[in-house]
Image (cartoon, rainbow, N blue to C red; front, side, top):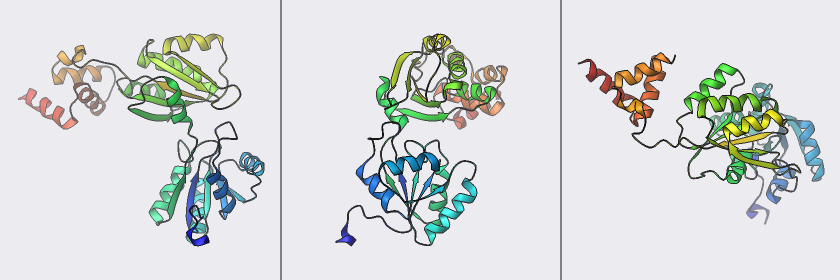
Length: 288
């Protein structure tokens, strides 16, 4: 009977277990079973995770695995897995390995031939996308933007022509700076959905424009962790005046804005809907 058990926990296996992002009732029966039966649980914050496991009456061994110890801790976890033990990886909230050091231990296991299984559940990014009221047909996940102003602005500039709905994570103390930079990169009228404290008592979704969001938070203090869902660029084909330029002029335009040669070529190719190699050919033919 035990050998045929559908959800039997197997040795030498890493389980990626989703945990609630706010409401503690949002955990699956399978997640609780796996957390109870693995040999040990690797957690981003063992103090927070201990409270969660205790709530469900789970007393499995906890080990620490987070950004600043992931190299040493990851090797120790891998060694235990290779010896035949089972491990559940959890993060503070949601799905491990998404904007999370868990991606490194998954890579280690993949390289070492260790089986990795998923116990799905909550994910703040997908939850916010569903709530946003924006297109869900095609989307991209950007996670946390760079903390340094210049790097953040450069990243947003590269995303200014992204046609898919974009998803970002942001902390409250950085929200105003990020919104300001988004307004500069995307314009004031770009639609945005700001989801905070998802599934918690103070859950709130604000659907507005980037410009209005900037002004709203000039008078309202950001509170809680945010997921920002931003509308993709809606630019009709052929409407961009840059497309009337020659390929060389198009690339020169971006170089004059401070972009390096390669980045300018990438951006011009993206504008024209062609590959970099095709643009190279056009540049070469212009010279001839």
